Length: 145
Image 1 (spheres, one colour):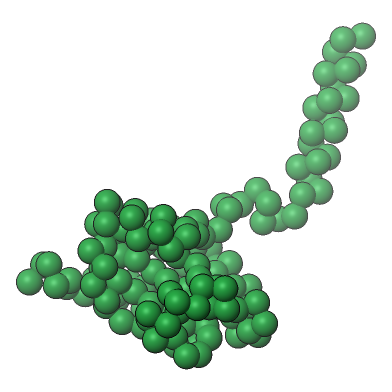
Image 2 (cartoon, rainbow, N blue to C red):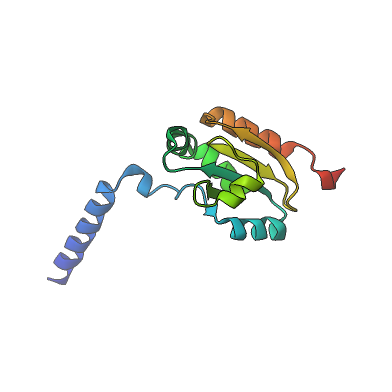
């Protein structure tokens, strides 16, 4: 009788996993930090910081989040090599202003110590974005020279 309950419990678990969306069992996506968390982590870990400035109303921001930031290669490369900070330009206007954000989406890159590397305005498709991430990471930093 007991094995019958175990069988039913295992069958229910199997069905739940089978019906979950495909992405639910995959990686959670990009690990986003708040501005304060990400800046502190970048300094502590001496990792390049990636800022993503967006707004809820922005169609190209939604496209970048749906296409570029869901691409498994982009997700894993960012999570392994960058501290990713997501900033809502409407809600955090001072931060957006400090980085001269005038159009959305905008991607900014900083050295771990906070020195600015550069920015990339607009929507960027996954393959191009991944290529740019690799170039940014491979470029010599001010502290290396």
